[in-house]
Length: 169
Image (cartoon, rainbow, N blue to C red; front, side, top):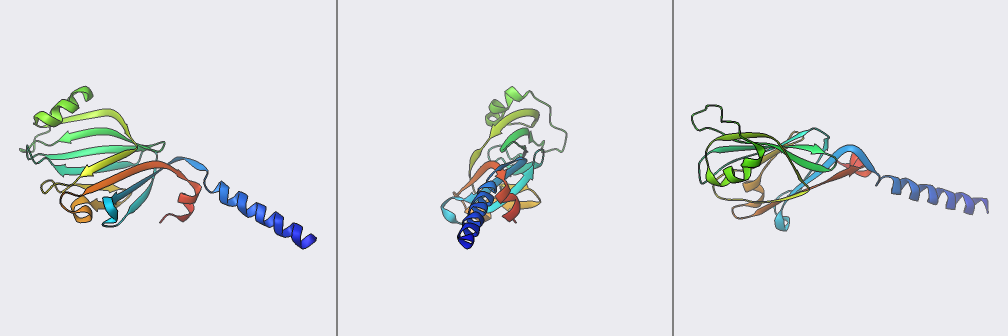
């Protein structure tokens, strides 16, 4: 009986330990980046709240270098700023966050900060021009290399849990 009781107690403790590994940890965000259809490698990165994620690409229509900066916060990526660089190297003019959507389509250099746009999932379409790449947690992913021309790269964002913290690379 003692062996049976000890075995059941140990099993119950192991089950509770495993379940507790799936508890959400405050202050940590997990991002997963993978090409659609399993092409390329899957990248998973744990970020602390406030850690930046930077997407850079070249706008094919206007030929401007674009930098989008996101911040990890509570299991989301918050787009904080967008900069369409001036081709002459001059600082781009500051614009209001409410003007960004229109300026993406009309062209010209600009910089917008304080956007506060939350994302939990983004699908990026990879074009021939643009050379998009994302830097997060000390790692860089080159979209064209991973997904190829016309491919899609999917970014999924979630809150990290204890399991992620213990077993993620």
